[in-house]
Structure formats: C-alpha cells, structure tokens
Length: 164
Image (cartoon, rainbow, N blue to C red; front, side, top):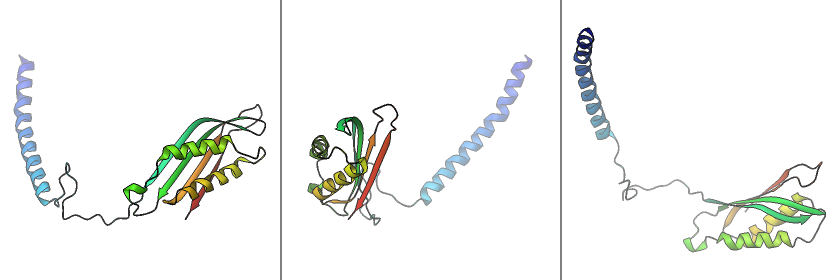
C-alpha cells in the first residue's frame, strides 16, 4: 500500500504542474503566432504581396561515371563531372537538354586526336567545346578524375573553370 500512496502523491503534485505548463505553452504559442508576420500559404506559394528580390543563381551538374578512354598507351577509367551555372534571366525554353551534351562529351573523348596530351589539356579543350556550344552558361567547371590503371601510377584529376 505504501507504493500506491507514493504514486498517488506524485500524481497529485505532477498533474497540476502539467496543467499549468500546458496552459502556459498554449498561451505562449498563441501570442507568438499572432505576432508573427503574415506569410504566404505554404501549399500555394508566396502571397501576392511578397516579392523575392534576391538574385537567382541556377546551377546544374552532370556526372559520367566509369567512362573508358584509350589514352597514353592504355585504357583509362574516367569520372567526368560538368557543373555549370546559367546566365541570369534565361527563358524556360533556353535550358539545354543534358542528354545530347553527355553524348557529345563521350564522342569527343572517344575520338580524342592526340594520344600524348596531358589530362589537363584534354579537360581544358573539353570545357571550351561545351562552353562555346551552350551560350546560356555563365560559368562551367569541368572535372576529369582518372583512376590509376597500371601499377606505379596514381589516381589524379584535372579541374578547369571558365567564366563569361
């Protein structure tokens, strides 16, 4: 019976305390919500009165993994990442389709003409070709990662950034 009395006494102390805390939190939340600035409906976007004046920056990235390229008297395993930023204010119709871009990159690297060029030179030329083909880009970063293919060689990468 001693345990029951202890439980009952604890409940008699905690119940009013919980009631006061609940009342306080409810009134605090009501005050905070009434003082908060009006916002747009989260399910329907911003209100008609709100205007976003911050500059919009749009970027996109493509990664071509496990691309095999015959180069330097062997086969290299490449990961190619192309990241680019769009010019401000482009129209919806101006966004480039990345699939043809990927196919162009693969074709360019498959048919690369100079067997002895360093990876940095290949990447520099690749970034220029892509950048010139897509004038809606304001910035491009091209990275070619080369996995080590022979004993005694190292994994390496070349990163090239161009700006308009």
